[in-house]
Length: 251
Ligand SMILES: [Fe+2]
Image (cartoon, rainbow, N blue to C red):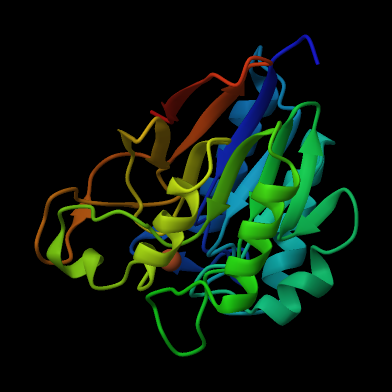
């Protein structure tokens, strides 16, 4: 691999069965289409898409078909993990065949994408069950010379918002212990928090990406909407294991 990989990160589109459905005053379908159209019209072309959950709001097959139809426009592999509003079963049925991939481990040159399922039925917070921790641990040890980008829905680090931090990854200590024990993890990406944040932790870039719909107000102890527009993120993976990212807001 000599060229960087350009990954498009989209998250939390919250699509519905009906294209005219509104959520918090926003048509989530139109907003998602606007994001994908913005990418398609830009100079930079993605090599792959990461979609980190809450792809639908109403757990409907039609919502996933709508997602598939819109993203297919980009004509690249799409790697998906479920969020608390998703149905992992229906999602895997609709988004489980190439170029769509539901969770799992995928290599691109000397980079590996590890897509983890952190959802728990009837809980808006998340947990990595032993089977997911095993997938993580096995992949990290099996491919020690590959640079790894991990993606999941729930935040493994606190946001500083009291209400959101009650809905994060409930066993983040187990997750962080595993990545702390390896030297090949370069970045961890998540959704769920509807806001942009980045921090370096033990040489691993940890970041959240805004929703393709509406955003939550950062640092608020109670649920508050932010006035920021829909957004997405570019992640540029370099052959030497370094990476750069940039959030794009739709004005
Ligand atoms: Fe979520």
